[in-house]
Image 1 (cartoon, helix red, strand yellow):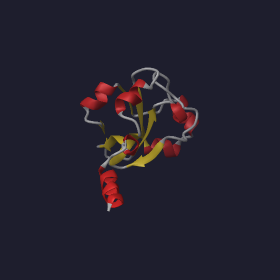
Image 2: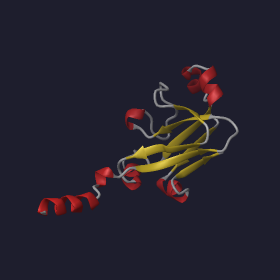
Image 3: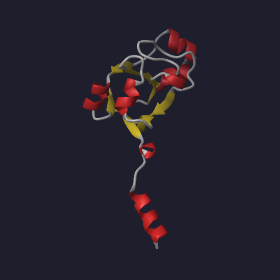
Image 4: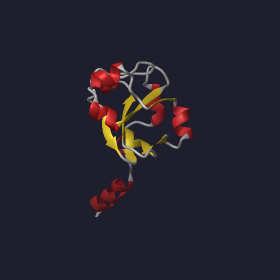
Length: 133
């Protein structure tokens, strides 16, 4: 009986590790897009740097809504505090460009549709939802 009550109590508790924080990306264009968040770490680049050496972490072919566009297991204030600067960069590409050109051509020619440089306050003001265009 006690074990059952303890299990019910534990089931109602939420561990901070179980939380997942998301920034959604919404594509309102009439074509598919690809995107890359420059958030450092394993993804390779931080603001103000530009595009990474490889397209390993570029997400291709987004039609409308990607949830999450970016996810984190730590709250956004901690995430932004962990960046060398307080800025997260997001690069948007036309899917046709990503499919037609090599990554080196895309990177070296800076073939992006849009770049967003966002602070934590910007992302919060957007309600953790980035809308392109």
